Length: 270
Image (cartoon, rainbow, N blue to C red; front, side, top):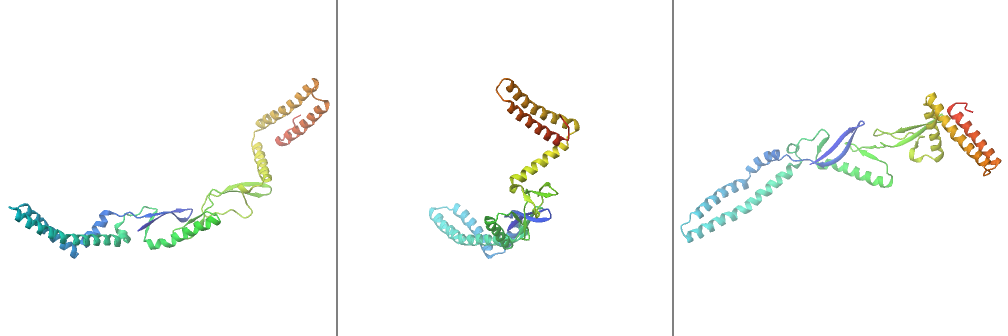
């Protein structure tokens, strides 16, 4: 008898695995022993066992070699009869065990997430699992099988983005059966331009969350870094290493950088 391990996940009763239901030896013995006791083989074996024990005792009490030999032959004859009967009894025992394999009463009670089912009831489930495996080789869409053999898509862990009004929003699928909305873009499918847009949006949100003092400090540090570049070129011009045209170019770059800094932080640094 098989057991199906299953659990309710997001409202779906999904199969987590399969196993063999464990037999309770005490319960099995309680079923088998009374049935064996009523068989012809059991009765004959019991009678022969008594006769064999008596013959063995008689053999041990022999008073001469001739008597011993005679009683040994009688004992061996009884044992020869007992052998086939014992084998037949063992066969009966095995047959009863096999017949009871589908009897839930001789198996341990399943856990809260187990269901004991007869083997033939599992055939369609195994066939469905096989079909899933074959389909995934062609179209690797993740699915889980439910206890009623229906399939439910499993997109948990899938990251995607949606865009509305120029704003990108990230979402993660965390529930069984959920699908990616129409028009959404999988994270892995984002273009370089889309990633640039998302990065700019994230940076704007970060800056907006800064306190006025933190924003001023950050902007001032960037301004000072830009000024340092101009000062370095000025030093090189004085030393005759750089030209006045290179200094003018550095100053123009600084002006553009300062404009971008002020726009980013909403300031009017000079």
